Image 1 (tube, helix red, strand yellow):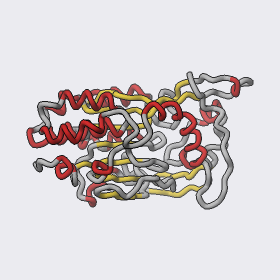
Image 2: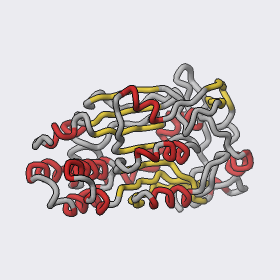
Image 3: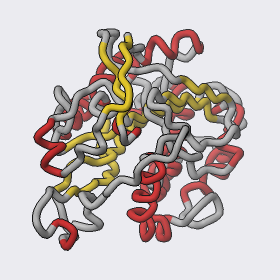
Image 4: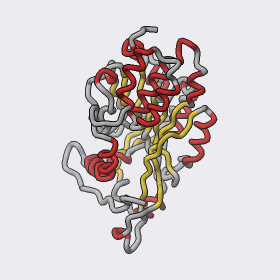
Length: 320
């Protein structure tokens, strides 16, 4: 293995982002972004805002699922809701989301699995797997079961109130990942308010879903083979940092201190520190996260080819 951390990462640090529409660059210095092989997949027509500052970047518009069962991919009025799975009508009505789920177009598709996408790219391992697939997250994660022993982090959209037909509950997915040596590190929940007479006056709501962040347990990483555990430990520190978990990233840096070469420690220490050097500070980000989410959602609601309707987000609670 190369002594230089950046040389060790190039060609081996793989981030897969399924449902990448609207996403931006990770909060990392360019020196680290340039080591990442980024695979972005989004069939809904939503372009990501990531730059070209990567070791390699693959943009794919395939419809991804857990298997190749034919289905209907529906492009919906609110483009971020597009997908293969049908939502439960009673939940749409509970929150008044009928306008969001109106179908703009439908096409018959035979989905592709993630392993099938990776094979022609010559990629047989994934470090960070991110899914935002409108009810298909668990199905796709299970289709990659043979890859999970090497995956060091998973970010996925999971629901406490399953919205789509056939979608599991949050705890079912968490149990599955726990059995494969992942632990839950972070949650970004979203609360929704049902239609009531005084909905607009309410600030709180029901927790419906969350973006969940799981990391492979540190003791499992330490048990990897000698030629693998050092680079896996470094990658996990980087992934925790770029996912906004700098405190945990610093803890991992301490935990793996005996594994990592001193030169690597020197390169990794700056990225676990809180600050605005590589982007918006966590404090500022937390203050403005909810308005930013609404603005992002509004942007997604527009047809890129022609002006579309602005959607009513009164179902989203600002606090609980």
